[in-house]
Image (cartoon, rainbow, N blue to C red; front, side, top):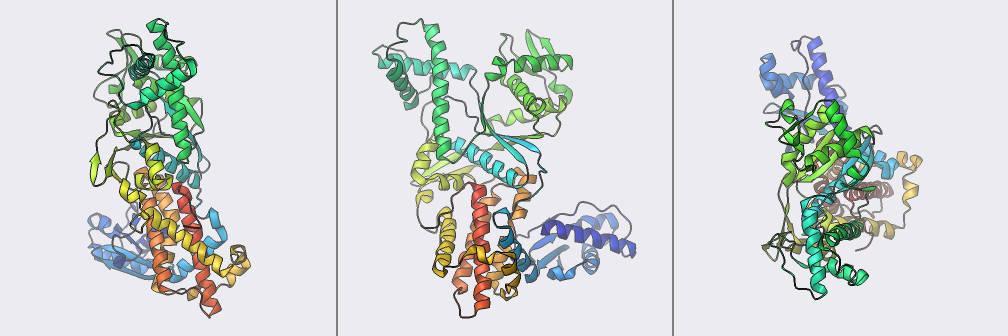
Length: 557
């Protein structure tokens, strides 16, 4: 990848300058190479001269000049210059033309990396409490997790997708009780609905399903027996609804893991024995405490309450220990809502104490606000006031739902504009991107040109790609080569996942500008074939990018 190539070139230049005694001997720090904020500063830039200035007591401009003078393989660049201590690199057109040939040869494998080296990674996402339908905020959870999984697969990891169902705890009891009361109400019984009960239509909907199947079977049961029965009935119904929505959203899970499995299969008990053997827990005030404070936290945390019931933290320790020790994941990535951010540090410390330091990564996402007709929609899950993910998908389609929920970094709040997402104009970025792909398909259909002919090695090598020198052609090629770099950035920092939809938009925008500036069907066969190759490469990269986003690539619109 070009980013690493530039980094290596800078390191070699520094070593060469040290050997020539143009620079003193020092340990070379990490070389940061990034894309500049403005195009006028070239394609890539580095602040290494600024970083070294205080260390070796030379002005940044002087250090930059020495580095530039000693850069090997200058033919890779059309220009290298220094500005305010930054070294800016502009790649030569021949580099972009060579990558264009590579894209045509690799096709759908372009962007495939070996960063993961086949390591086994689990991405756990979804994980909504089964006390209602999946609302739009959990759509962000689902799409973040699924897209991360796709990117990690493209980067060479073996990925397993898991949905964790919190089917234990007080909220399940309240929800089951809410459905039970609605069931009794449907059978003509007078009920007093509790203030902390789950309001809205969803408990009524589940109650109707239970009544339809079982009629009045539970009417004469004792209240405790009936509530126990309803707890067993409602969870599968909620999971079934969630699975239906996931299918609509083009999301597949390899496993739906229930919290209750930790206890039914004695996983919690086994892990508890390990914690006791390692002396990581102790008893106090009838409760069992984990020694979190021994690992840098302010206080210890309860894993089993005084009444004998496990805490969420206790369940999480058992669940994640089982992932690493028994299921042999090399890395686990959890996607959690912001309300769980306080649990991140303590769970990571617990895993480190159990021997799995730096193997657990947790992505925290902020919640979503809905903008409709210029106004923010108020939501409350407990009151039953919310917009479900299914409603949004039915209104705007799964592609727009995905794209708009990925448009911001997970740690940023997101406003979902329903009116924009449903529009079929160039203002809608999803429409704009998909239209670029459909336009390419239309061009190829008109030319009646077989892609398989032009991407064969012998044909690619014969193409006169050096004819692609128009500014819009260069700009399009500059965008095409960035996909592997984008994937690498996201693998190293999951909070950069929003760069992928922005990249898709920039690529589509570059293509539209190229199409408006350069005629493809011209009398000069060599130029026509070179531009056709550029279009085919754009089709490949745009399709690969949309696949990573989980968004369809329609040939007609």
